[in-house]
Image (cartoon, rainbow, N blue to C red; front, side, top):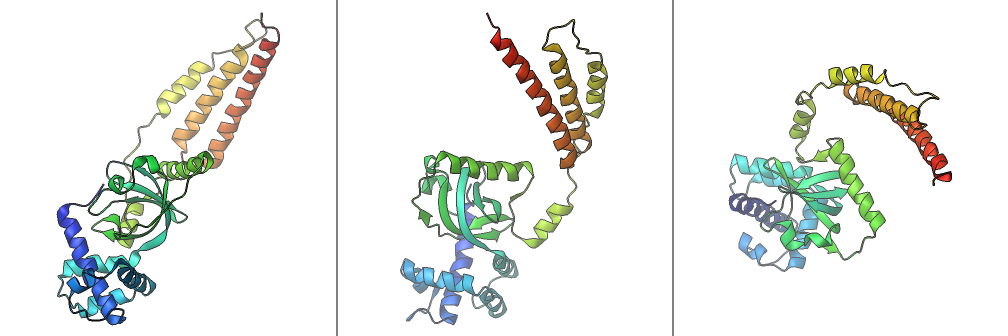
Length: 276
């Protein structure tokens, strides 16, 4: 859930150099000659420089062009990609093995920590937790920029369910964002997905067998609607494997299943009225 020690050290090396440069360019601090002088500033002064950076992201272009720290081409490329930062208010919804889930109005993000894992900073029992964060691309991953102010807000059950549903919907649709680099997004969009198992022959075989299920007046009252439910469910299953992206058709099949379930519910209600 966090970067390796080597990557964490690289990140801070680049970020401190960039922030020191911004501080010097915008003349935000006095008597500073080195990056260490900047690191020794108060948190308030660092935050001022941070806001200056995100308020004028073109400073990254200037930093890369001038390259005052004599960074390598690979290091400059990492910094250049920070132009694609996302600054927003987020809910940290859950911790998974390799990342935390950050949710905002812009999307659902898989985020890694830097030096300390998120559960060391924010215990699991406090999730969901509201934070203000800046997300950055870093070597094919998403990290936050090292500052994570939070809000002491208690969330009721309804809000928690909504936040969880935001995550579940993004997961189901394959829309969890795990890379902020434009080229990575294009590659992901064009990537051929692994072929899914074709269940159509098995379902069609079950449909043929289900046709033999016949209700009628000479049978128990539950048989007819339950046999109809089997057939409606198989019909929905066939639509799901044939046209998984056709939501209109899937809704048609789903509504048919719901109608049959309501009929079964009515049979139960009638049976309860004369239950011994």
